[in-house]
Amino acid sequence: MPRLLVNQQALRSAVQPAASGYVCLACRAQSQRHFSVSRRSRKEQLPFFKRLTKSIFGDEKSREASKKREDATRKRAEETVATGSVDYEQWVDEKGREWQRAAVVDPSINKDYKQSSDWAGLELIGGEQWVRERRDGGEQYIGFNPRRKTELTNEEWKNLLRHVIVEVMVAKQASLDLDTLTADREVDLDHWARTVGVTFEQKDGKLSMNFIKPGDRDLIVQALGLGVPTIVESEEATRAVDEAGEVVGFATDDIAASLEDKQPAAQDVADMAALDAQAKQRMHNIKIATQVTSGGSKHDLPAYAFMDPDIKLTIMKRVFQLTSHRLPDAVVSTASTPIDLYHAYITKPAPKKLAQTKELNKVKVSVPNVTVYSKRRTPIDKEKDVGRWKVIEEELLRRNLPVTGSRYQGAKTTTPLA
Amino acid sequence: MPLQALRTVTKSQNGVGAFILQCKRMEFHYCDWAGSSRGMNAFLKSHLQAFAKANPQVEITVSPRPGRHPVVRGLYMNGREKAVCVRNMEPSEIVQKATLLRNANGERLRRVTKPVKSVNESVRGVWDPFHGSQHRV
Image 1 (cartoon, helix red, strand yellow):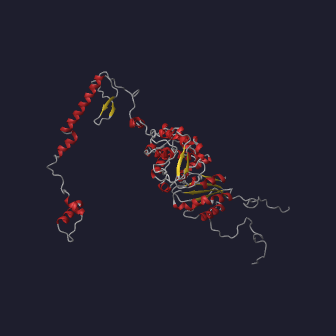
Image 2 (cartoon, one colour):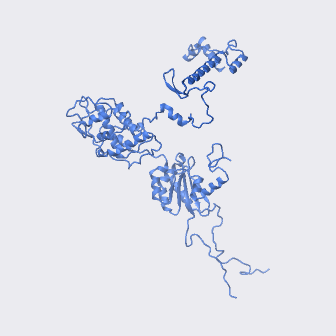
Image 3 (cartoon, one colour):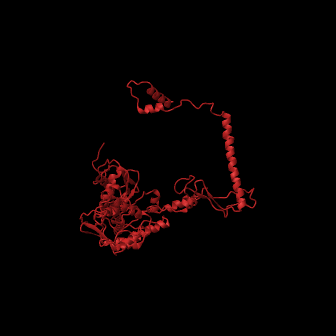
């Protein structure tokens, strides 16, 4: 009814001239819409009894559809008898997708088929594991980035960034699409050694890369899977320059910067027990690569500003793909050189819990009469400290009482319900 | 028969000869999220080390109590405990409360009516009717 009143008001406003002579667009649109103020005419509906019988017993149409389905099933059962096999059969649906569906067996037709009386030896269908094996055609989805962040030391971060920057610069020099750098590739230690060993220097106002060996640049491009580059070999072939002779991707400001390690040695690699084998291996290879290529760490990262934001973003994307480390937008927007990125990556986030802060860790270590707990101390913890808990637990189990929590249907208890 | 002295046992008094601090343990509870625990968090970061070093005979524990106001709890030799809620307090105020608990014993807070407390009955002897000025009726 309120809707009716609103619509009536809209109609009235649209039809009758208003005092001010103005009708808003919404009201005009409402008045032009068709609306009904009455229920469907009873003449169009079936009588009540017929509607009831239709809902219980079905009508002609539903009976025909049901018969059609039964005929199709019977036909499939007869085909099973003809083929003589009850295994899975291949089936292609209307959209061209291939499926494996179970054969239909009708014991009344197929006399040779003997039904099993128990489930011994039969295939188990269903369950989370079963779905996981068949989902996506059995392919295990690994994902773009590792599930856990790879923890690296400061030296390893330098190596990683140097490797990624060289890859980006080589791709840029070859005028290739930077998106191809983040395609899934295996970790190749030789390729890493070639990239991490590159040194950067500024000559005559231009930034250049000095490779370990003359043919390293071509090998790097091949390793990227981009094919042999079409750059003409020249005396200055190792320079990352474009047609105008300007530095490709980096500013030529003569900024002398030195790296300062802001953080102490990093933590160990995160626990990889929960990861699947392939992702684990990939992360392990990256960690090994950054450790093995430590020879390049004596050289600094280029201290030149990013000219092209695509280069900065490609570097960050590749680092994210390898280590799962993200940087906040505020940090990304203010980072103008690879050194800024390096400092951003090695800076650890502030601890969220007071028990994890530096000050409390220091107190824990330096003062012997202080004990710092990171979790809430429950009464059970206090009883365990005194040594009384095992007695309490034993008595509770003896009396068939819940050890923790209450006795509800899903309670975790060590003894079965009485 | 010569006068025999009363046999009495020495009554031990804490502080005479040796002093044992009655507060044996202090617990500091804080919350990582609540705003009322800001002062306590700052106290734990800045003042706790000095307080613990100044009181090596007191066992100190620090543990979170999520979703609750910060509390300082003292446990004493007589088995009792005293707790002080230090919500919205500054670190210096929390130091004062911690010192208060550290100095207390486990006795209940009671109103003191007598100015002097002593185990000695009297200095000049308790009055008895047989000595002193005699009253004649």
